Structure formats: structure tokens, C-alpha cells
Picture 1 (tube, rainbow, N blue to C red):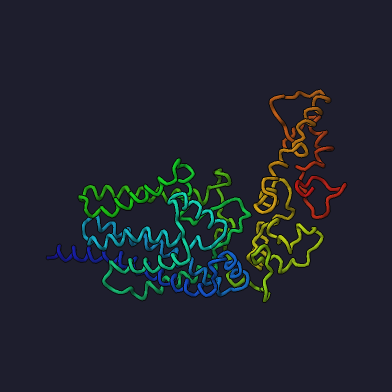
Picture 2: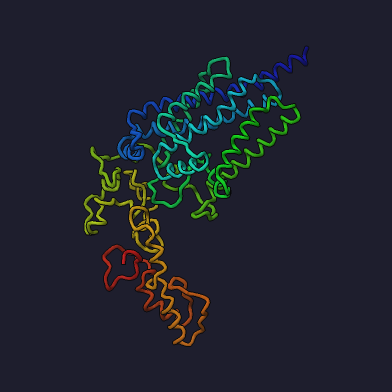
Length: 451
């Protein structure tokens, strides 16, 4: 009797954890739905990007609600995954009805599409990249505003299938406190397309990494469907094979999370690998949520179809010509920074003071909609490389010349010929960076595209 009582207590303790994870997950979903309903009144699906830009610049309360919507969705993802994991542990021991287990498995693709559709509805450069990749994986995935709402309702219905009781109040209150605290101080960004790094949400970075290696991206979708089928079939497996399958899923899950971590903290431009903090425009930004909108005017300045906070302070700037006037192209197109904040510190973070130097030309002058493809041509021009001048100068001064090595002005050595060029000709040519504002004239040097 004592042994049976202990067994019952142990079973009750093991059942309490999945119920707790369900309470957290359902509370997070309910909060995300509530915040989404509040955002709907201020959101234009035809101009998602413009809507969110206006929130960030002039509507602090709506920005806070957007943050809460984001963090509630993240909490739902984490606690929903833990809920499914506990269901998986129960399924391997055959203690769960098939209908309840089927609902738990169905929750996985529903949550994935729900979160991805919410990310796509940002409408920024990162969102367009995710939509493109999803199209390659699944041929056609039109994630729309209406589908996002429908998926949220479906997730709530599926989540309510397994339990036979209502969610408790205390876990719901804990989720609300955590989400509100995070929403006040950490905000999701908005990628204007200027930065060459495009990245989806953290839980999708692993798929982006795998897609770079896969010869046929559609095989990723096939593998995901096969894994879901095996997961759904697990309660029918013998205890021995169910445990093996569970270990395999644990290994796959850990490997995928590690891959996401590598992509998040060690992914550079053009596939290079180096440690970096995720501080791209579309990543999270720390700071008091109300601070970014302090001093917003009644009517925000609009440049190229979007609100830009830079012109609230720099609207009187002149002397750049019609093509490059701030009223025509804004400030962020060339200088970068954060055009969706009115806080000077945050708006000027990552600012390029003198855009146009060849080191920055690819993300200023050479971006889409401006002079796309021109910076590489400038970098390879004789006004930049001076390859022929370098060879002739070395020959004249009696230094060896390697016919198979093209030395450019950016990689001069320290011999007599190269020092002569560095002090004279090279100091004027395009590769020399311009460090001060002002017009290009006979006394100025270098400047890349500025010249």
C-alpha cells in the first residue's frame, strides 16, 4: 500500500509539470492574442512596414503593446515546446490518449506557422527574406494577415484539447509580469534593408543555415514532415523503440538549437564566421520604450513612402543637391543609424559620419534603389587600384616587380617606391578615406564615391 501510494504521489508530481507548462503556454497565447487585437486597430496590412515605423516614432503605447505581443509570442513558443516535450515523455510510457498526443503534435506546425506569419507581417527586409526562403521550401506559403489570425485561433483550440481543467491564475499572472517587464526595456527592431545582413527570427536561423548547404531546399520541408510523422507514431511504438526515438529527437533538437546559436552569434556577412553580438537593425534593442518617441511632432516627415525620425531634427540641412537632398532620400539611406527612434543616442548608433568612402560604399551609395552595382566597379577602377602606376614606379626606382601579383593602392608596402606613392599620388586617389565633412576640392583627399 505504501509503495502504491508513493507511486501515485510520484505520478501526480510528474503530471503537475506538464499542467504547469500548459498554464504558462495558454496564458502567453492569450496575452499575445489580446495584444494583437489592440494592434489591429493601428495596423495596415497593405503597409505593414510603414505602420510599424509610425508606431516606433510617434506612438509609445502602441510600441509597448507591440513589444508585449512579441514577448508573449516568445513565451508561448518556449512554454509550448516544454509542454510538447512533457507530452512526448508521457507518450513513450503509453500514459497519454492518442487524441491528446495527436493534438500536441499538431500544435508544432501550427505554432511554427503562427510565429513565422507574425514575423513576415513586419514587412521589413528580414521579413521579405524569410518569405522568400519559405517559398523555396514549400513552393508557396502565402502568410497573410488573415491567416495569422486564423492560426492564433487554431492554436488556442488545439492547446485546449488535452487538459480537462481551466488554466490557473498564478501562472498567468507570472507570464504577464515577465512580458510587461521585458516589453518596457527591450524592443524588436525593424530592418530598413540598408544593412547587408538579413536574418529571420532566432528559431528560424537554423533553417536558414541548413538551406545554405542543401542542394534542394525542398528536402528540408520533406524532412520536417517525416519527423512530425515519426513523432505522431511514437505512442504506437514499443517502449524500447519509443525511447530510442525520443533520444533521437532530443539530439536533433539540441543540434538545431546549437545551429541557431551559431547563426545568431557567429554569422558574418556573405557566410563568413566570426563572433558578433546580434545588433543588426532587425535585432532586439535595449532601452526604455517611451524614450524613443519623446518629442514626436504631430505630423511625421515621410521619405520614400515611410516615416523617418532623422528629419525631425535635421530638416533644415541643405547644400547636397536635388538628388541627395534629405527631403528626397532622407538621412538614414546614406548615414545609417536608427531612423525609427527620436532618442539621439539610439538614433545615432552605428552612424556613418562620412558616407561614400569605399569601406562603406556598399551599404550607403550601393544599396538597392540608389547606385546598386557601382561600388564594386569603382573599387576595381584604375583610379582606385593604381596597379599600373605602382608597377611603373617600382621599375623606375629599381625595385622588383612581380608580374603575377597585382598590388593595389590599398596594399602598398614600405619600400622606397611605395612610400613615394603613398606620400604623393595615393593621398589623392579614391581609396583614401575622407574624414571630415565639407565639399570635395583641390585641398581635399580621397573620399571614394564622395569624389
